[in-house]
Length: 187
Length: 282
Image (cartoon, rainbow over all chains, first blue to last red; front, side, top):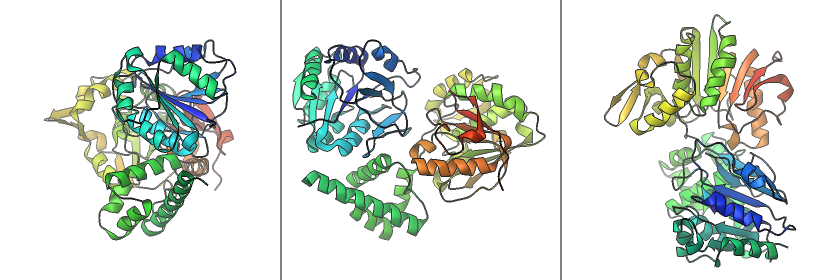
């Protein structure tokens, strides 16, 4: 199976978790990654800058209408939902919060599943609510690969646990193992 | 074609027909909205009504009362807040107001105003800058239900804390509490803010220009439209603005890649405020 894109949802503790994944990615890794990280609606967007520091990938905030490219990592801007279109572009909305969150992981995952079908990997990391669980079910129903950070290795285990509880998670592993797994299967 | 691809193909065709028939029967045109958003809204509605397909929903919308209103609500953009993005209002105060002040009479158009929070925010700003009395404000939306809410100027009290913070950050000159009265779980805004506001139904997709204005504020509406429709609506705005008039968009919206970019000067690139520098072709 070849995977065309990876979506990641993270919340409380997500910054550190994402950093560990990016630090452990293989240098030849080029599969596009799209991230919904919960942040306060008042926060400025610093995540892209933070992660960009020493990555071989271009890490940036997603823009409306932007085409998804290889070797790029896209991050949902604070206070906007990020949606993937079936023509592999991205769009933003200011719709109601979903699971008290904007960006919502569910919205990213649901729309990415429709676009990439079984060529998508969905990953749920540390967090304190259950956003992303519904999205994981969608990815799973289209035949994509689903991964949850193992709750005991997560700073806050609630979100990966909620994803695991759907019964739709294929792999439950640590952050280092996630980096290793996606590095090897996306090559 | 796999079974899943087949299913998605059917769904996409059903969606296209559904939007087409809604346009032909009800006159609301969602055909050039971004697809992922519209599809997600419709699929959630189907799920919620425990239906099996978009075709089933279509039947209900066409033949049963109340269903169209539900779809209209699902597809309209109603999330807004007072002084949303305080930096935008600060920039308006500093960069745009001084120029508006040079006109004896100003017309302002809030396009896609939803429930009106940003209209009243701007009305407050105009009052504080001493410009309200010479302003005519048009606040329009395609959805009559949200306009009714806007006309009342009554909002839930639990949002006031956030709005107060926004107001302060936007460069507000008074105490925010001077503008409203709280009662039970609601606040009602000062009725004097409404005096020069006309609320009216107007559909950016299907209606045309109705006035020549000095300032258009249309925030977080264009992000729902595809490129083609964005260009169409921005042309409408360009036609409506006087030479030297201003356009304020949402923080993730941009004139950069549109057909009319060379007709505008960037006033604030972060807050997305533009000034029209050419004369309208009539």
